[in-house]
Image 1: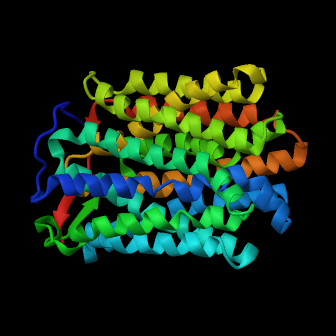
Image 2: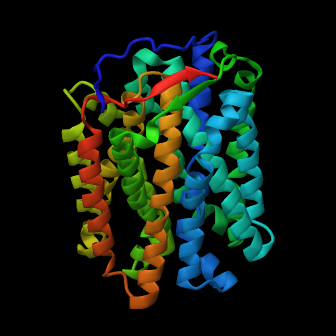
Length: 408
């Protein structure tokens, strides 16, 4: 059973946020978020080139796009455990360094390094991504919706920059795709440097560990999880395969990368505005239906519409997906009573959700191998989009998950 959730946030129980330097925490959150997508979106514009260089089939290329997303889900449950032992800030700092190592490894040692580095990068992103909503809920309880929008906007910006600049970087370095992919370890290291002061401070909420019981028996928690997973599956299909689809339709790799980058840049608008608007409504159901309709319209337009209208459909797609993901993160915060519940709901939603999401990119590779074309992808889009909408309607109700948060 769930309980009614108030629309106005109050200071959550169990939490004692320490904001000695709130501007530094905000800057750190933005820089960390900027690094949670380049490792994923940078590979898509180069996927054909990497596949030809290493002799990858479409199915193995699909596995390459699926592996990081699968790791987002498989490693997400580790985040709350690590946070209880070491503190969220310290874990974020350490995992940022692991992310940088994974990006470097992905650019070396050929196919083995490519897959091993992708695994390490996906695991790192999965752990950090689970922890940030709890930090937002604790340190900015009265601005949870707007801060989630800022965090998501930074995340989308990082994805857009990587998608649009990786191919030009590769060309600049004499068509060395390994350098183009490896470049993204630099911002990860810079984010770790800025985040380091937070890792040195011990927040009062870390001095006491809490256990959250009942999430996996709560229907609302499962609706949040399914919405997160199904809309994310569409997002990672776009990150992993949209440039290949567009190249198959006649665009050059540079044009395809720029179109993906442009679509992601548009996400900044809805990523920031959707949670802010949705938290001022009675609930989030109408907002979820709207962004999912935009997402499906953009996907079908990019797949089937005439080439001269692709930029328009890319904009529609960006508006939909930016809002869809931002709302998914906002739901984790809004459906939770305090930061401990938010951290555990985040672990469930992203752990189980991203495991579900990983099936989408893999299915695209398999379907393309079987059919030799991209036309059948519309069925995948429809199933995932309708499923996400149904789950989102349930998750969008103004309720709290009915769980207990207790000291251990």
